[in-house]
Image (tube, rainbow, N blue to C red; front, side, top):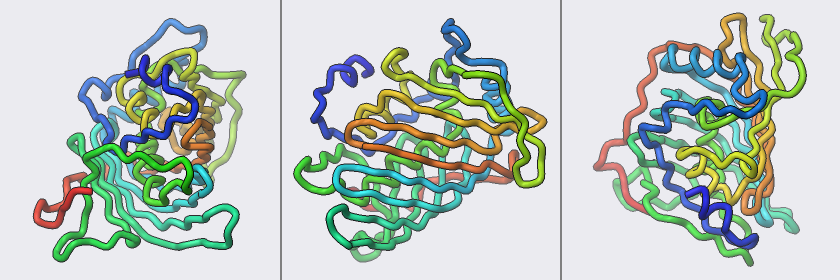
Length: 267
């Protein structure tokens, strides 16, 4: 898949909204790559896997072709397995004064993505769309506002960026106080141009539109667990993405299951 991603022409807008949550994606790959997969990242990955579950609060700022969105919400996460998020979204269309507020929910589990969004007109008796086929935005029109959450919120899973190939650390970590607790801050990056992404990250990158590099700032607590992750990236379809994700309640009771089949329709 990564070879096809690298060969995609600059103007390509092929965006797949169906994430590939293959079992092999649950385990990160260690690479011999200078400072890649430093001890802090390795410890963070181990702690996330050991905890099995985590909750998160998040803010995403995403810019696409002629439109953008701010997405704020909360999520239950089973790292490497599933995400259930609820959110509020403000969508803006550039060169106009149009801004629309909406609410939504996203479930990613079992290799499928389910979306509930207040802007959708649902068939009678249905509450969720299952996203089963590629969605190709028109390059001459604003990026559809419904594209942002299914694409961006996959990054809520901390293993997607920290355990999917080499992560380089720059400089020495610095101490910081976050929400009254002592943490250490690590500056990281994931260069997808130099090191092709592993399977899950490659699938996300195809949806996002050929992201080349991802800058990360990682806060870890005294146990080495991620408590905040800042993401800054740029690409082609997804012009830019900035996100702040605060992780909390490790090991809490979290369940991520598909919506009832009777409430689901395909899009």
